[in-house]
Length: 331
Image (tube, rainbow, N blue to C red; front, side):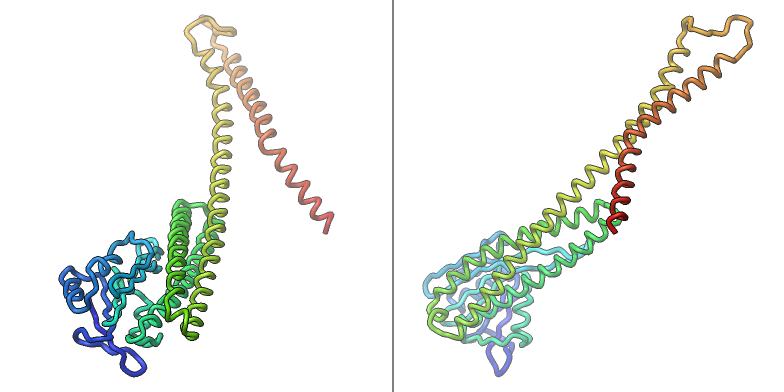
C-alpha cells in the first residue's frame, strides 16, 4: 500500500498522487507499486526494497543524491498466548524530490505523524528523520516497560505454581529482550552517522532534537540490559527450583522402591519351589509361621522406613525449628 502526504497547515494532508516535496508512505508494497515509486522519485529499487527484508540490519547508505537510513523498530503482535515483542526494519529515504518510508507493517510513530500528534513537515527531511528516531526510541521504552510488567505478572504466577506455560512465557520475553538489545545497538550506529549530517551538525534546533533522541535511546539500552539480566537470573533460579523439586520427587520414589523391595524379597524366598525353614509339613494345618513371617516383614519394613525418613525429613525439620527459635529469641 502506498500513500502520499504533503505539508498543509498544522498537520499533514493526504494527496491523491505524487507531488514534489511530499512524503511517500509505503507499507508492504507490491512490485508494481515499487516500480511506480521508482519512476516518479528517481530512487533505486534496491533502496526501496531494503526494508522489505525482515533480516535487514540497521545501516545507512548514500547514493546519487539519495540518502537512506534503515533502523529497527519495535512491534507488538497478538497471538493466543498474549502479546509478543519483536523488531522490524524501517527505511527512510530522502532526496530533493520527496521523503519515502518503507516497512512491512504499519508503524505507530508514522501514524502519529499522520494524525498530527507529532508535527512534521515534508519539506524538512532531516527534521522528519530526527522526529521519527526520537519517537522510535520512546516506543522502545514503552515496549520495555510492557515487557517488565508482563514479566512481573508471570513471576507472580510462578511463585504460586510452577507451570510450563509461565516458563515458556518468560523464555519468550527473554528472547524479545535479546532482539531489542541487538536492535538498539544497531540503531546506535545509525545515530552516529546521522550526527555527521551537515544539518544536524550546524543547526542548533536539530542538534537539540538529536541530543534528546540520544538520551532516550541510551535510556532504552540501559533498561533493556537491566531487564535482560533480571530475566536471566530469574530463569536460572526457576531452573534450580525445578531441579530441586525433581530431586525431592526422586528421593521419595527411591524410598518407596526400597520399602517395597523388602517384602517382595522375603515373599520371593518363601515362594520358591524348594524346602524352606518353618515350612508346613504334610497334614499340618497351623498358620503360625505365616503370621510370624508377615509380622517380621512389617517390622523390618517399618524399621527401614523409620531410619530413611529420619535421615531425610526429621533433621531438616529440626533445623527449621532451630531457626524459628532463634528468630523469636532475637525479637
